[in-house]
Length: 316
Length: 316
Image (cartoon, rainbow over the protein chains, first blue to last red):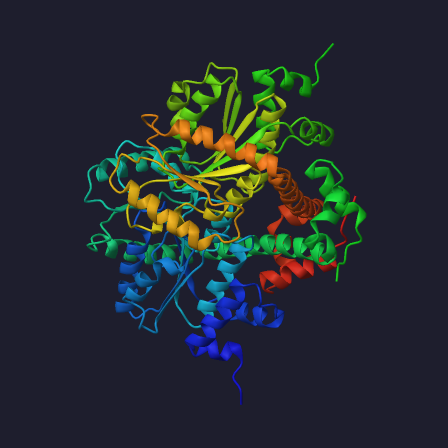
């Protein structure tokens, strides 16, 4: 008997995993029943967002965290949406990917998604990649993003906890802005802390967090690390897991997961509405001439209203 | 007689400009007639996108370019969507903004938009900021973005030409990926070229451009600059304007503007569809409990389809 896609995923069949992932990335996966089944098998993993500016050392940190997860017999999947990450695809970085120490470990799966050139659906696709990894039984799913940009923020909103990674540039508050949505951070890492100013950066960050986050459920901890040598990484590991346990006990995790779900529904409503609209008028979508005629010199906003009002929408 | 908003903008009334910009940023500007009129007065400016990774020196380059534009009696508006830019707002960077040398020049207007914490509409809002500046008579509108992220790409698609700013890190091809959508670049700047490896970086970039961009209308030029000392900036200035002239003559500019327009229409259709959907069911949008009940444990994707299919949509 032929195995179903879900069965192949559950057996951690690497070919099945990468085939489905490519189909998702290329938008050629349209089997709604499969997506539905996939989702129902994706509810047991813990999702950790790791975000921070390019060059903060997120990938090195993730690499060392994977080592710790594996020592503790936890399986790990990584969805990387940092176009600058060494995990990221692209021919340019092929060598680095092959060098990856986890490449032969079936308990680890790394998948990168280039945000370059993608015209839409980045968040949806990243979430589905997470679901696929979860379906293969990975206990921990890590989402790596640079944290700046709307799609990137939408991705990180699918995580149970978010770790924000910074580097010490003492007195330079600009770096906190570089980190993207610092409000989402549950745990902060000042990486490359063997450089000057790490302590000062942690201090500034601590003040910044106290001032700016009155609405938080708790005050996030700040950990100094040097991911390249492994220093402090065990602390990140321990505190992340403790935090998740703590959120679980207090009922906060459940609430967060409801929010994650609702965010995904909102994103899916947007994607579905847009797709239905253009599908109902394929000639408009493909023929700029016709669309320009319709628009007829109005502002893009009234052109959009005119299009929506005058076209018969297909709601099936 | 009271002046209309458009008249005040056309008189370069700084209070009127900043009031309308704040209204756009806070989504409190909903007067469709005004937006329409604004658009019709925004068609005469040249729009230049300047994109590149944080720390590449975009803001310094822009600062020097403004000097050159002003020397040549051209007025300039800047819409900055780089959360790490010194032009960017936020209390943290207040001092730097006040230090800005162009602050007292009525021929220059700088506006920054934080992408942090914004939940949607970043591209729409940036485009409208550009329209406002254009309506005030600014001949050159510069859009500054970090180039990574979907909303950022959508912003840059509203520019007539795009300048990609990189730094020399010889042999490090990762930086080309950091630059975001390199495909959109019409002109490349290797900034901080007093550092080692600038020539090598330009060479690598040149090879990269030759290999990767067969579909281009022309081969983009690469300029070495040291924006902090001003070196090479005049070249960027001259070549940008020449390029625009050239595109104008060949009819390419007109085609690009049609594409810009269509991209804005597509974005506006998306925003409008989403807004109408949730407006038609305000209780769903605000009450998570009800939405969760509707979703009823299905995947976010089928929940979205269910919602769209079962709710009566308001198309007015």
